[in-house]
Image 1 (cartoon, rainbow, N blue to C red):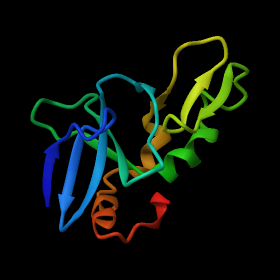
Image 2: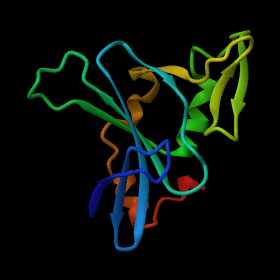
Image 3: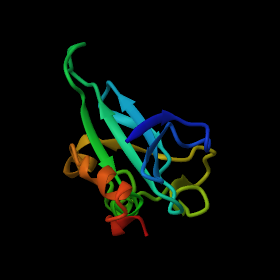
Length: 139
């Protein structure tokens, strides 16, 4: 397996390549209570969104990693506190990685808390499954 920084697309930070298969990875990190203005993950291709949490970690301490597929992102969105019953929520832009959009705002995206992604903690097998083409959740 090779991990390379990528310029393959403006939304991918890392390209992971193994035996002719690659996974595009977007990484977002935080040191505060939430990840801000997260814009989602595309349906097309093979992508992962990795949330890295450095909050209350010492310099040499491993951060927490939360690994999410496109399907998991889409399924999570309607259940987020920032979206449920929010009159300013205008839906998602399916052409822009299922990014939440807001009425009367040019801003796109949403804040994500650890509680929103806690079930994805250290789910590194998703990367291996995608590289081995065993993960059906990318469809």
